[in-house]
Length: 195
Image (tube, rainbow, N blue to C red; front, side):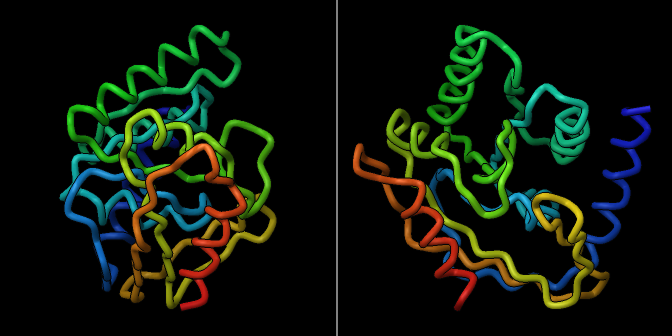
């Protein structure tokens, strides 16, 4: 059943996202850790096909769907063991860091899994990755001009309508330090949303 759902979501995503009008500003040229909100991730998969991207879904059934989608778009996938041991999680983080060292980008929904899941409340994982990899965090503002929102979902997931305009605005890169906070990251994303 999950395989069928994954295939259907891939077909749906590629059908819609290939018919959007993308307007992109300030895209970085080098490897980066892209930070965006989970609810605005729909157009990212298709648009980022020209980049050497890695995603980090959990090992849940929802993660199975995202992993299938990512593999169809030829991205690297490192699964995060949501209920794994600290050692298992550490091993997966090490795999992700190796891919980053080899020149991959990472696309990270900063309010996404693992739980707790709260709308537009960032987690510290991307800050840890930036400190370990010395790659910049690049906040990404995503605006869909014509869309359907799913208000019953925790992330208020947004699906653009075919032929809609999508604005992808990259903020200034930030190398995380011990002083970098999730509140700072939330502020950067909020600033992009207001532009």
